[in-house]
Length: 86
Image (cartoon, one colour):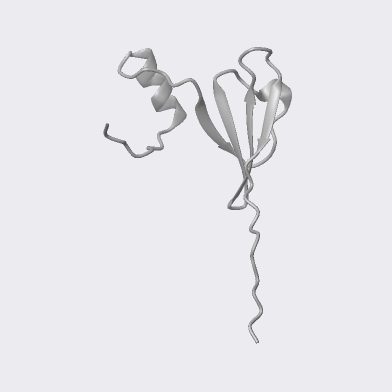
């Protein structure tokens, strides 16, 4: 199986390609945002990737079953190991 790289396209392009049936719409389309969205701003089928400065913090989406706002932390904590020599 050939693994294709991730390609970033403007959301309007992807929606146009799907409307023209030139590509199949994925389950979720991703939008990068700077702060947490309000519950009323979350659309079904969209994944909101919250990035502050250059650090990924949260993934937000609407649960396909119940419609609740789901918020998952994606921030990576750097945990170092230190070893003393001597």
